[in-house]
Length: 406
Image 1 (spheres, rainbow, N blue to C red):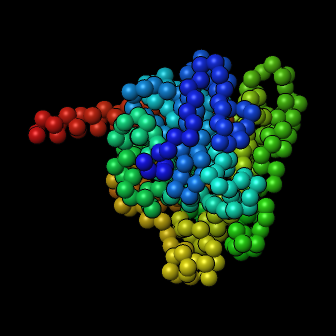
Image 2 (image 1 turned 90 degrees about the vertical axis):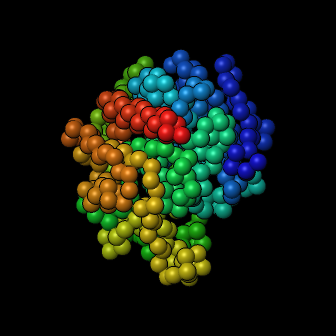
Image 3 (image 1 turned 180 degrees about the vertical axis):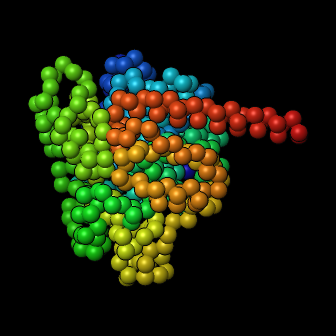
């Protein structure tokens, strides 16, 4: 069996939590949140070709079309269940889909490895390149192996979208295993950004951190796990009564603008157990490299000339080539999303051979964080699910037509 589809532990939870004797699992899983809102849940584990054990949270609907949802930076699968029954995961399930919520290496509950410890610096030697080149393929293979389906749809937000772009560029064989991509806040080239204070600061340090995997430690962003989750909950909960499950949080809105634009975002009380999750410094640094206005393009990680020559055969990293894939691509953006510029969207539009749609949320305040933390994103989810349904009908009709011809 391919390593990427090995089952480490599957626990179909009705009233029990997850246990995995081969790994140390955090106390909190999404099982409680799923059960709280009346949805079934399963926990699955797939392993990548380089040994990372990835958690998949499933809202099961056996026999239905499958959707894999890729997580953003600082957040695992919890980001897609924070808006209660208006959450993307539950709306997809209600629409008739078998929903699989992915957790990239180091995020959510994907903090286990076949031979590395999460406390090892080597564990955190990755950027979003590895998410696209290794994590998404491992999760896709596992899901298809488990469901016996031939292909699935992919949905991603932010880094979940960026990582899929990497998959499309470096793993062309997945063109037939992913029959459609639905990307929210798709971040590729950041060289044209003008308004992000965060990116303006980050790319100034790019040259200092180019060889971060050799010179910096710890490789996990300090405080990106329990401490910030605790502080986030403490600060936000100080503003409103504790009996409100979701509430507006002024500090979160301020931080949200700093991170990429935010309008009417809320802080789900349950997030203090899940968000933010672990962040590798190389993930942030890869985005910092893409934000350098003197280094335009959507490029692979810049390790410095010496290592670049070893890895790429040239002094500078190559651009990702997105032109080979033939799967349909749908893009969704917000008017206040300062990570996704018009130039970035045009680059993506002309890169994909089967580009289908670009939808911009009409609310002028809708920014990067709103895709997962704004209750009004529910209307966007409905539009995206309509696109997903239409694509599925189109592909089913195409299969019937081919069968009739034969």
